[in-house]
Image 1 (cartoon, helix red, strand yellow):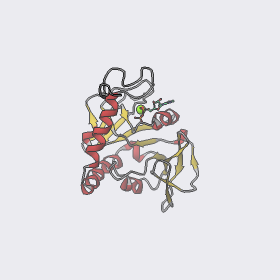
Image 2 (spheres, rainbow, N blue to C red; image 1 turned 180 degrees about the vertical axis):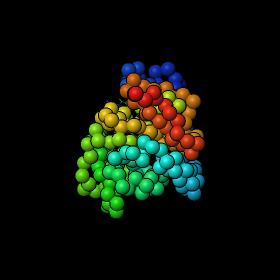
Image 3 (cartoon, rainbow, N blue to C red; image 1 turned 60 degrees about the vertical axis):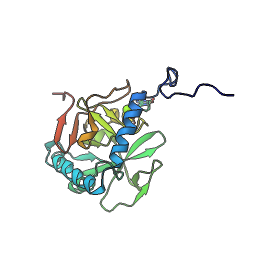
Image 4 (cartoon, rainbow, N blue to C red; image 1 turned 120 degrees about the horizontal axis):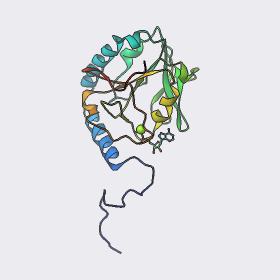
Length: 208
Ligand SMILES: Nc1ncnc2c1ncn2[C@@H]1O[C@H](COP(=O)(O)OP(=O)(O)O)[C@@H](O)[C@H]1O
Ligand SMILES: [Mg+2]
């Protein structure tokens, strides 16, 4: 039986009320990820070093007692230098447990294993209470100047961020990942800042 070929984006292609992200978000995600995969590793390293230097000079980083960072995949903003700079502080990174992120302490020299999403996690590390995080450094696929964040589509950080009750939150991104305006969904949680090679963008009004 033959019929008209299915056209992606045709009316009805996305079931109404599916609760999924918009077609635009998915297309943006794919386009930015494809661009980022094409960055040469030396450029990822050089750009990441500039971003790390901005963060290391930031008073919110210097006064933080507990920093949440992440163990980067090869094309994300790298965090090795930042993790070393943060060493006198408590440092934790996320680990995937079911549909949630839990926080695990990252001790220097910790043994790392791949979690269910293929992201490195410290093995057998102590849990950290999200309410104890002072500064959260967050990866993402794209951000905008209002602090909206597009992730990989799992909503993991949207579920974690409300539990970081006292943290200043900051997305780390290469400058091309900051787009004019994302289309946030009702569950998307905006960040306070976004940091690129060009510096720190204050995204949200800070509570006084
Ligand atoms: N706070 C939340 N509670 C329950 N489900 C959530 C929450 N935040 C996000 N989700 C779910 O996660 C899915 C993916 O979220 P989305 O914002 O598209 O991903 P990402 O932030 O990773 O780009 C959504 O379809 C939504 O149903
Ligand atoms: Mg989201």
